[in-house]
Length: 264
Image (cartoon, rainbow, N blue to C red; front, side, top):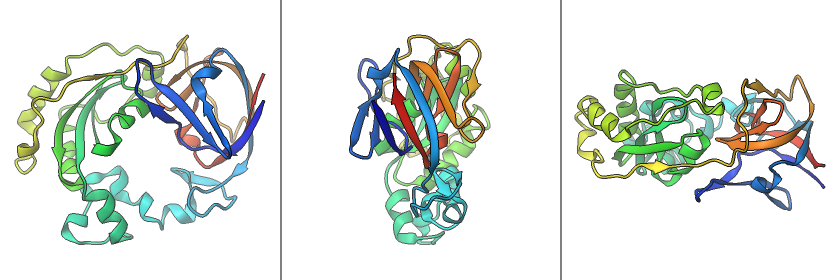
């Protein structure tokens, strides 16, 4: 069986074990069912997720020109403290920015390789935690806009990491942490204007991933350098496919790549 299409991040469902789905033209692939199957990936070209043209992907699934022009790639995406829609100030498209920034956001703690602080729209919980490969996560603050969440993250990352060690996450070396205790310790550092939105009673979310075998040493597949690869799929964690030979493939960082997927 063969599938072809442009890569986009896998869709997920939080169940006892996370369920993963690949949406390709005319196809809906339940990726969990491919475990222990031999897969072949071939790079066919590119398709910018915005303009749709066959141009090399620059970042986030967009070609270079789109990345520097469209509101979906504004600096406030990666740095929410730069959000200004609450002030009525436009970055690239005020209507879009109001839609995305002026909605509830969660500042959270997630443990994938270590405890980290992050920001996501409330509507993206728990999807964001799954995509980061976190096996446990908890909300700290729920703010009415992205700016307040952003300045809270900036304040807290002085006392806790805001990065995930993706290699450690994929080898499953992270230990369990008491996220309730972390939340209480960090409460002291929440900015005054965000403190009224502190979440004192939210529960911890625990996440189990469909992995039959974790890699001992991680080898990342780069389709630009290796446009054709075959391997037995042994797990899925975050947005990574994990193969038997310790190769891992990050779907998210290859969005916009057009591939052929063949099943043996």
